[in-house]
Structures are given as structure tokens and as C-alpha cells.
Image (cartoon, rainbow, N blue to C red; front, side, top):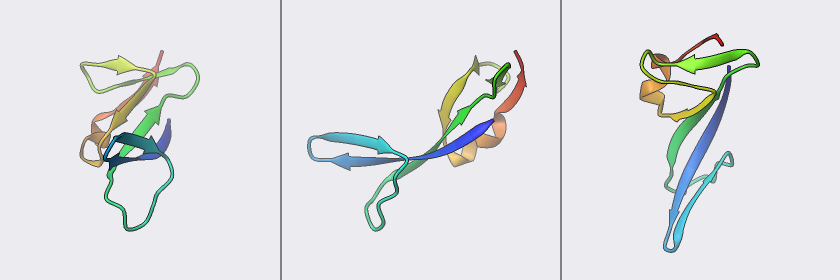
Length: 66
């Protein structure tokens, strides 16, 4: 499983989500989980190849064989 940190920044005319962190600028931090080849991610009710989650819910996801 690959974990990629994503930051969402809010502007006056839209939002931007990027793996680039801009210091001292308010953002929401989330993590993109991507399953390895031949695997899928599951939280017990949902199964997917890639999901975006918060720090609080990352432990609910596991990687299993496809």
C-alpha cells in the first residue's frame, strides 16, 4: 500500500489539492491510499483500489488480495 499526503488549500475562487505543502497557509491534510498490484483496499464495507482518507480513519483501511 502506498500512502501519499495531500493538502487542500481554499482560495477565493476555488480549491487546490496537491502533495505540496505550503508552510503557514491554512490547509486540510488527507492521505491517499493506493493498493499495490494484485491487491485492493477495504474498510469492511467498501472495497477500492485508491481512497482518500483523514488521519483519524486511516487505521480502518487494510490491503487484501484481489
